[in-house]
Structure formats: C-alpha cells, structure tokens
Image (cartoon, rainbow, N blue to C red; front, side, top):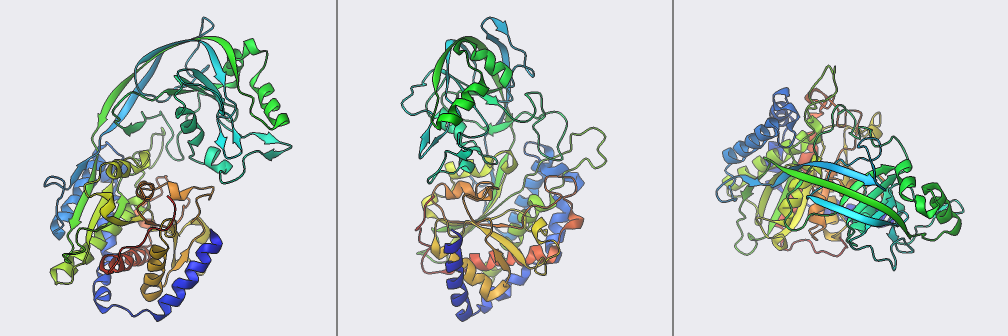
Length: 531
C-alpha cells in the first residue's frame, strides 16, 4: 500500500506542478478563515454545550446551531422541509435475571458480566460448544465443519492461536482484523453461524467488574447506544472470567489453559462439545434517544450533473460530561474532536453558498452532513448510508473531516508541525480521487499530506474509526482528513484555547479546493479499488 501511495503521490506532484490555479476558487477560499472558525468553535465547544453527548441537551443545542447556520446561508432543508434527519438510536437497559451453571447460581460482576444485549429470552442448554478463539482466517478456521446454530458457544475473546511462538494467522487476513484495537470481527464471525448465546472468555486484564470506559470518562458505566433494528434480536454475548469458564468445561477434564496449550502445541483448532447444564433468563428495555443528523443541501447548477452529489461530513457529537467524582473540569468540550471538523463544514458551506449567490455555484450538488452518534459507534452515518436521503449511487465522494484543529503527538516539535494533515482512504476506492486531492493541495494549500495511517492494516485502524467508513463500505470513494491524536484526546483538556485556528482554516481550505475540483469536473472519480 505504501509503495502504491508513493507512486500515486509522485503522479500527483507532476500533475500539480503543471496545474493552473483557478481564480474563482481562490476568490472564495479565503472566506474560510481563522476568525470565522474561532467564532463558531467558541460557541459549540463551550461549557454551555456540555460536551455535546448524543441524546443530551448539549448535542441538541449543537444540532440547532448547525441548522440555523445552514438556514442563514441559504442551504436547502431536504428532509421533508427540515434540516433534521431523525436517527433511531436506543439505549438498551439489559438485565440478566437469572444465570445458573449446573444448578448453581452465578453472580453478576463476579462470575459474569453482561453490559449490553437485545431481546428478552430464556435459554436452557445441556451442552456448550468450545470453539477456540472463534477465528475464521484464510488458513485457520475454528468453526470449519462445526454446526453451532441454536447452541451455546464458549470462545477465548483475546489472544490468538500460536504455533512455536508464531501466530497461525497469515494470508490476506491479519491478526489485527480479529483482535486488534476496536475489532469485533471474531464476534461477528461467530454471530454469522447463528448461536443461541455467546460466552466470551477473558484471559487478560481485569475481571468482569472493571469499568471498561475510555480515558477521561471514569465513574459509572453508561447504558450503551445502538441503532434500533427490525427483526429478531441478535444472540447475546456475556463475558466470563477463566474461573467460570473452567467450571463450564469441568466435564471435559480440561481447563481453558489446557485447551490453549493444546491449540498452541498442535497449531490447529481444538473445538469440542462439552456437557454442561446452563440456564439463563434475560430481558431488555429499549429507551429511545433523541438524535438527529443535520443536513444542508446546495443544488448544483449544471442540468446534466446536478443530480450527482458530493457529501462533506463531520460529526458534531462528543463524549459529554466527565463522570469521575472530584474532577475539577467537568466538561469534555471536544473542541478538536470534532468541533474543528464541524466548524470546517460550516465554513466550507459559507464559501460555496457565497459563490452560488455570485453566480459561480458548483456544477454538481453538495450535501453538508453533520453526523450524530459517531462517538457511540458511527451511528448517525451508519443510519444515513443505510437510509440515504440522496441515493448512494448518485453520491460521488464523501470528504470527511474529523479533528483538524490541533497538532498531533507525532508532529509536536517538528518543523512542519503547523503545515500538515493526515490523509486516509483517498486511494482505497479511487485512484482518480487520490490524484484530485493531491492536485488540489499542490496547486493551492501546499500542506504536507501524511499517508502514514492510510492502510487498512494500520494497528490504530483509523480508516474504520470515523464516519467516512460507512460510505466506503457501500462503495462510495472517501477522503478522511485528520490531525492525529494528542494528549487531550477524549479528555477535558480538548478546549478552544488549544486550537490552532490558522491551521484549522488551511486544512479546511484544502477540503474546499478538493471539493471545488470534484463538483466542477466533467466526470466523477472512477471507482477502481475494493471496499
């Protein structure tokens, strides 16, 4: 991938060196300014907005602020005459009423943990199926030839199959896909085989009683959020420590440690059915969450091209108030994450709407999309791309902005710390899109475009961690603009006072120039890559 990006970048440099600057685009780009960015961000990232957590008053205030800005600019409300696109998010109040093993009751928080689930169900089983790590990679499949439909499954939820100290996973599947940061691939793989219940054995770190919340949050665990789904509820996953797992496996004469050793020594799956008397009864209460995406539409001027749409997106939600007792600063303001991106799309919208008022509007249409629920699992963009207001086949690209107001940890102290941006995903689906982004930068902004994280196998998995991914998985080309994480990521220190507003504006100008070329080109960027 890196060699491919280098080659594409060289092509972009050669193209950019010969490119002519467009005086019309250059007239409107300066509308995107540090002063305007500071005006917007000082409001939406203020303490008054209480960290803009999805479902809370601060997020609602932010949604109305964005909608009011879109209205003042003259963007069209295309959701049945509204700027608000309702996203059916729910909180699941999940409770295990009873859970017994061989007649003995298990205690929540000690013998098991069930933080989330859906549906209401009673399960009685006389056996469980141990499926190793639950991995189904190219050359290693714990579930090959095994029918687990309707059965209780137990699997090791962390680590990997080893042989002579080396991972057994190779080929196109990488371990990071199965057990890397934020990966849920092994759980999804087991779910695809339709078990009745999944018991995930944790063999590392604190037991079920651990908080499990991210940095800077602390305190009591919030009810998880999810999109409301139609149809039957998915099987529930319950986390159990090794001690409970060993009780389940007792009739086999083996412990989890024994089975792990057997897998490592043989280098092959060791799935087996074990006798155990399990009874569990659980229920779920669905609590509706008020949540909206904010949409502003700018119609194109070209009769042949105006049905094609460019999406420029950013999420306006953040993680809300600090829940740790005794904290001095109670607000996770989210000035960079993603107040900076939200500010960026409002500024870019102002530049394009002014061009349209002057008779220089874009040939294609533009949808400015403020997403909710990104911090809860990319929920707003997932719902939009599954239920698009404008069909995705007419969507030519998503330019997604998530954190463009700070200097990331890796650039602190570097000579180009105030003149860079990480670019992710530009060539994943479209070589042409990558070249358009390179050309725009080489012609106008001349930022250092850093492709360090432009790799699906990047252990940080940034390609999968913001709203652009929901477009990409539907085959829509994307570019993700990002300044990298810093010491205040998801902490109260992510405040307006630490934003580099000239850098924010310059990065947003890069998005504007790239968008200008996309919406005014004769052809949309061709898709020649894989999702």
